[in-house]
Image 1 (cartoon, rainbow, N blue to C red):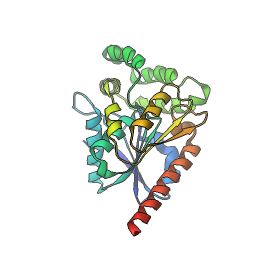
Image 2 (spheres, rainbow, N blue to C red):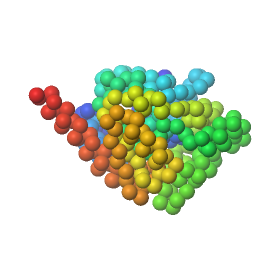
Image 3 (cartoon, rainbow, N blue to C red):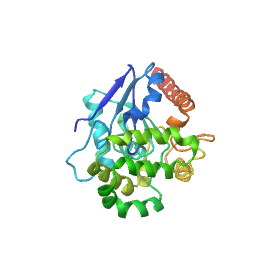
Image 4 (tube, rainbow, N blue to C red):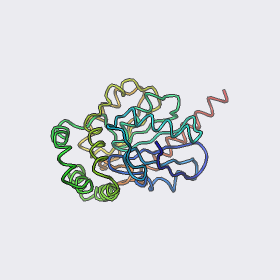
Length: 261
């Protein structure tokens, strides 16, 4: 599987994993800052963006994790900082569980471990019919309005609506099937990598799950952005960037100190 990958800067690698119906360009608010000190890699997940579709009948977290591992190996990268947004957390959790030796730090922004039951109850049985009669862009437009209804969430909402224009119906159906069936709760309990959870305290759909993940993931640290909702990397990108940069720099400083002793 050939993934669309864009790279910026040099140094220790930082990989950003986008969310549902998005693409690598949703991370552009992070590129300018992080490329100054790190080797930044943005890529489009299988079925998304310029990577496009594949002949695989169904997608799951392990497949996405294997895709990431292969992409990093092809780039000659042995370890990297992994940062994900929203649905990307399901991919990042699976990757960190399956390939912990490749993870320097794991950061889940706007993360969750399972789509809430009321979303699954509505979306799952309608998936095939819905994707046959409505274009993905319209479905994302409706869904993002439900998930991010407030005016202050408009920037994040529009970013995903714009990105969804590249999706084809068959791939979109497979992506929705993955999203509605994925459950990372067991994986969270097994994670043993340095983990940070960055969420908005007004992310009402998922804040309860994030707090559970903080309890389940060994040593996880929770950072809540006051008054922020789901798409923390876009809604409050400057605050997120400063916090994430601090996380990375602190880890690397401590890592260098441990090597010196």
